[in-house]
Image (tube, rainbow, N blue to C red; front, side, top):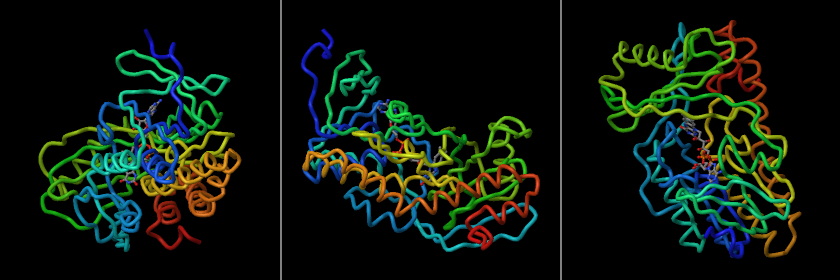
Length: 358
Ligand SMILES: Cc1cc2nc3c(=O)[nH]c(=O)nc-3n(C[C@H](O)[C@H](O)[C@H](O)COP(=O)(O)OP(=O)(O)OC[C@H]3O[C@@H](n4cnc5c(N)ncnc54)[C@H](O)[C@@H]3O)c2cc1C
């Protein structure tokens, strides 16, 4: 018998997705006393890794987990725009073991009392507000939450229920490869063939995450895989990396925040809310910080029996991030429209250059 035929599970806050946004939201809501259920469709939280694994230095204090998730320190960022001199920017941070990071957040949430179900997907929301879950073994069950936090990534199912889908997504691809010698800066590369995007080499001890993100429409430089192969060959020829690429990974990067993140009892966080920086593609910081905000307001809504308090999450993230995300989105639109004017466009649209902030 399917479990849906029994009484629905009850919880205060249902968190959908066990990435950094979901882990942070569940941890905060549970810490503030809410009865939290987190569901994640993957078998193992954080795996496979589809990320270049850089976090800014200031995030480390916020995350505050016991597990050791740092792989190496980063002193700054080198920007290499084809045909120009390299630019060095102070952008300190860390390269992390992303799966350890995601798992640590979820473990902390469990330590605070959150229930966690892996291998479980949300499928459907009924008009009554009940949510249908499906486990990998085919079992289904119903949950009746008071608040739903959609932390289910760029193609969010919860976002679809609310009518808020990510309208502007860019593909990102990546491999892992051996470094010729260890590096202490992240490296960012602009080349005309990485159309309205950039390539990265992020050092991780003796290896590097090497990848790129670009705009597929309008690109006439071959498949994204061909462009990645060419980029890897160029880095080999420049003496930075060696050996055979491993661990091909691909994912989608939101490039525009969704218009609204709260819909009655539903809040969207992290990539589901389009909170990734539209120019750099960085989303871990916003996922964790936004996740904590949503978790806090979800717990308060439950405690004070007032769903409208969830709107404070929308105000709070806007205060912190909306200006930055909106400026970056404007720069992205410019970058996509003027890529042919390569060098001027890159200077206006990349965070390492003064022109970006004018
Ligand atoms: C190639 C690449 C490199 C990147 N590099 C960086 C980087 O170096 N630094 C950085 O800051 N950001 C980087 N990003 C962006 C960063 O990975 C995301 O912004 C971040 O993962 C967002 O976290 P999240 O929790 O919102 O979403 P996710 O990490 O995507 O987590 C969502 C979770 O929800 C689960 N899920 C989805 N649907 C369902 C469902 N129906 N039911 C249950 N579970 C569901 C998924 O399995 C997933 O685990 C990169 C992205 C890509 C694609």
